[in-house]
Amino acid sequence: MASMRSVPPAIPSEGIPDDDATNPGSRTRSIWLLQLVLGASVVITVLLVQALEPSLFSLWPFSSGVGVIIALTAIAIVVPWQKIPRSVVAAVPFGDILGIGLLSFGTDLRFGFFWVFPIIWIATHFTLVYLISALSTVGMIIVVDATVNASGPVTALRLIVVLLSLTFIGITSFLSARQTRAFKQLLRRQASRLQGTLQRVSGQERRVSQMLNGLDTGIARLSVDGEVLALNDTYVALYGVERDEPQRPGAAVEYATLRGEPLPEAERPFARASRGEQFDDERVWLFDPHGEWHALSASTRRLVSSDEPESTLLIVHDITALIESERARERLAATVSHELRNPLTAIIGHADLALDDPDLSPKVREQLEVIAGAGERMQKLISEILATSRGVFRESSSPGAADASRIIASSLASFRPAAAARRVSVVDDLPDTAEVVGDAFRLRQAFDNILSNAIKYTPAGGTIRISGELSPDDVALHFADTGIGIHPDDLERVFDPYFRAQSVRESPTPGTGLGMGIIRSIVEEQGGSLFLESELGAGTTVTVILPSRVEAGTP
Image (tube, rainbow, N blue to C red):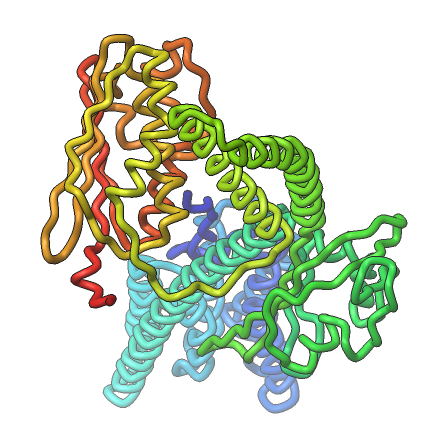
């Protein structure tokens, strides 16, 4: 919203400028100046007349004119003009015109040049009506003087020249005053606009400063010479810096590692940023003035502007909570992995011992092989989770080849007992072989999750049908069930972590909401794509499309 701003009043077009709170005596001082100049000129003239032509004092008009001018000057000094209306001020220059008329009466207008003072006064500070009235008054005085004193042609010509000269001076002064007033008004408007602009800019700077101070990220702006231009509150609080002396080291100390060796002064992020170095996500540990440790991520950004000198922005993030959460995750993964490995080792070991028995029936041997295979896959999954939690990532290997039909058949063998227990029939319409490009182990994870969801959310008596379509470019695998389905509003969010559709939440089957996201992630890692179609109460179809082995050109 635009800020409100006041526009200063323009100079009045009539009268002496008004007094205001910032200039209380402007009208009074202006009247004093204008009247005292005339009064001083008349006094000097009177002294000269006394010395050169004292006989003029015998003429009553001359003496009366001197008295009028001196009296008006005294009045101008005494009267408190700031309390008098502007129109009353005009009486002073008009009185001066009459006084000068008396001075020059019967003297061939030798003192008529004094009319210049009141004419310029009126032309400068009053309207055109006042100027015309003043010139008319002068004209009438000249006419009366010429009539009474029976002036000749030369004197008459002199009178006309005086009147014309005064008219020219008055009009010129009037036009100049108008231009001056207009120029002053323009300057005041421009000054007002400039003031408004400065207020808006200052307001924007305050808002930007407030926003920067509200961030939980420390920010320092440095010039190319290493001078501190700005610091936000977070940076000041972290480093214990004095705002008045930001160049001085703060009360905090930076370390390369937690409780390790302090960083040398030249290697600290602030010193490096002062030298103009560019770096990103530099990790340091900070021991703050309150005795607490902070893990910091420091980065720099170069600021280049066409109207400002180049500068460097030092950005410091407090990532202590992130580091702590990573460590907690590592501890949790290590604990869970360790606790799961022990029972899995026992399961796999006993399954292997049981498989060594030559008297096992084929049915029991098949079931034990499924148990052993599932245990081995669980062990491999646990190892991957533990390696990932420790930040150990293996380089991606070249795409392998896998038979999707064989992998799904193996997965079905594991889940058929669960399907039979829920009285859900599984129909396998897959082709004999479906060669795809991908990691067989990761694909088994995806297919296990799909079959697990289908069995869990298909009511008793339902059916799960698995089919496939082969083409030279890809292999499409369809997992269709007659389960509870998903509402159309929830269909787009089923891949979000921890999201469970309303139909699933209303069912008694537990779940975490992570399965579909894991499935899509695995399929996309193998270069494939995943599609989901569902109708509430009618079932769900999951389609997995994987690149064909023929397209990849693998042997």
